[in-house]
Length: 71
Image 1: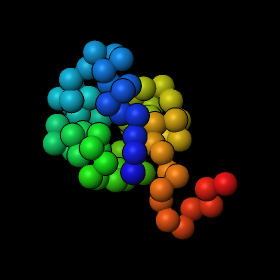
Image 2: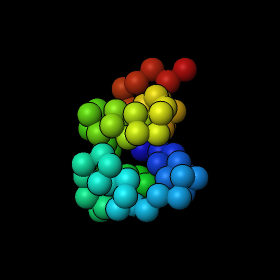
Image 3: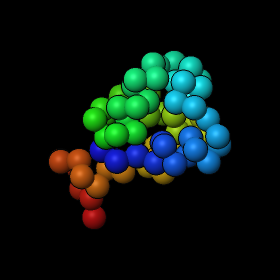
Image 4: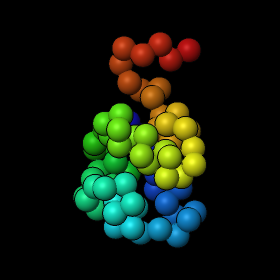
């Protein structure tokens, strides 16, 4: 799953560690999310989106997720 996490984080001049601490995960989790190697839980997706003042859909790209009606 693609995300805008890295772009949003860099715009705000945040390190992966700073974002991780803000949303209660490890830096490695943020790295994996940014590389598309890990899919966030709904709770984590909400925390990240809320941190940036955005909706989940504005941060996470669901277009390649099977089973969703991506019109």
